[in-house]
Length: 436
Image 1: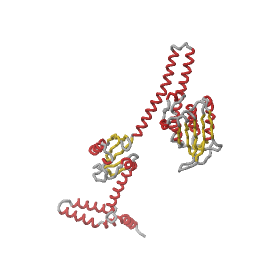
Image 2: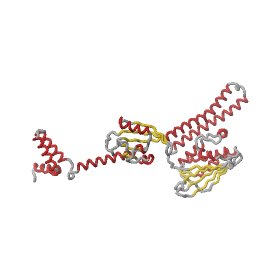
Image 3: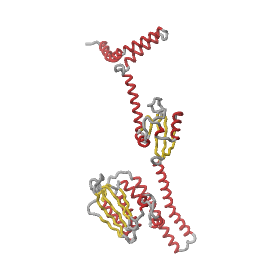
Image 4: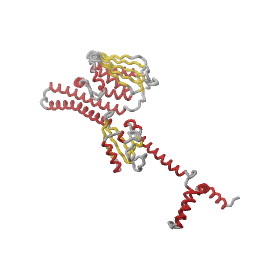
């Protein structure tokens, strides 16, 4: 049996054995340190007490500092530097916008994939090789000298015209080594933002104009009825009819504006329901038959008896085909015909099986230059005729956004004097089962 004192001694030996081993491994370094200390003591540069404390501190560091054959400390420092270099490169690569890191000489030490693709930024090249904009070069000089962030707007015209916002940020712990980043520059493309701003401004201007016209008409007739036509029964009857038509026009416009806003907000929501296109088209034909009859138009539906199941929102699909058929009735030939045809297209060239719905009229047709713009908001081939027939200029824009959500397509073909065909193409549902 070991005594209590022996157990404690053994445990201390086990605890300090690694430190003693490291101390013995560094006896050469300690001998050199002791010799240098002795020289300083003899020369009077150090007092014996300070020298003794210094040697004790060196021994403790030698015993406890990690050592792999005398190179562990240097290897650990090198590994730390490598990890740090990898880390800041990963951070720049993770920036969603084009970003480059520069050293104190303006050379590119790293560029993320976006900067390489859009600006052809290459490591080792100078900033001027990717952009010669004087504003950017001046901002870099200011950031290097003043050590503060700054932002400048750039106009790029090659390969396409763009407006960019470049932000130059000095890095806090930058060194002067060639491979050490001193500045980071990020580039934000404002072109899409400008385009959306113009679209919003145009939309507000067009909506205001469309609402202002019937409002002005209503106001004028109200003032007339309150004034000179107050006691004129015939004029009152005529004016009230016109006012009712203008109020209906405003109501249609407001309804379409709300509908467009709603489908735009829902455009990116996933679809979880399924619908049978044959059933949808049958209901559309039944709903619009009275409208077609009043216009003197023959409305027909051609489809097979089998189900045509697609993944989609039934109400939104109803709105798509109602808008297309109403347009065909309004702008087709008086006394003509409108046909809805449902067909199935087999999978081909990597695309899935899909269904095609053609809405065809035998009206005057549409000139080719108008076809690409028909789905724009408030765009009309004939503004006067559209307003006269109750059009708002938003129907096809609504159709486009609904089909975007359904991963569908809208194809328009027309020939002057021979009518028009609006084709909706929708992918079929994978399981071909209609959920009630």
